[in-house]
Image (cartoon, rainbow, N blue to C red; front, side, top):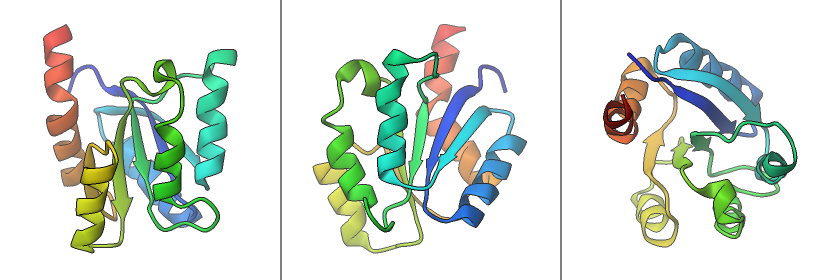
Length: 142
């Protein structure tokens, strides 16, 4: 596949999950570099540092919901308060073990979340994420 998603930010408090998801993304042709952080606050710190550093802005964030400290919902509250030049163009996909339909409805209703996916990532899921959220964008720029 052409024009890969250049940079993915993984936000999950579980090291094994971050490792596995990073490996899956690394094996998929459409996804480039990944950065895994273990908390919502660590992710916010990274995002806020982008304008002051040479850090690359992520194209996609995979966000866990249930984390200690700042959970996924709290991260989303803080994310929507960031300046638009930081958040613009970033797709946010909730990646959770929860299959509670109320959480799905809440995410779509209250937050500008692009998708909700159950863990773990797989090649088929990544194919679908690319096709649904990025393929049209990249085919129109080539």
